[in-house]
Image (cartoon, rainbow, N blue to C red; front, top):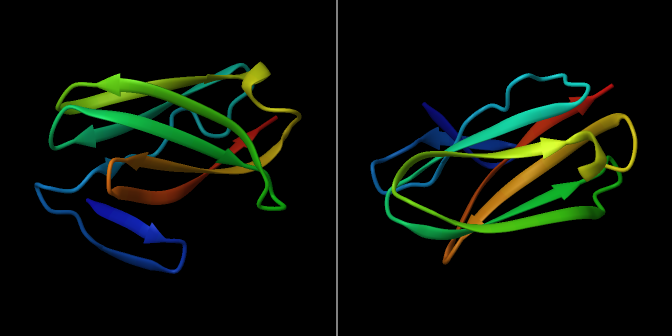
Length: 102
């Protein structure tokens, strides 16, 4: 799997990395699931940005080690468009991915 550390950089993920997986479905109308792998239990912050780079929403929760997911509903975003999301844990930031809402 490739982990995106920055929109312009990528590298192979190691077993100690937070791995951000593609959301599904993408594009979406009513909801999409954002999946990620954690090497350890962690508090996670998901930040969502609009096309202008403004943070428009944030979700925070605790998750166990392994594959986890967060669900984004249509009302979590302001309007149809292209968005980026960023996943953070204590001391780590795991790449940006794009999602499209119709």
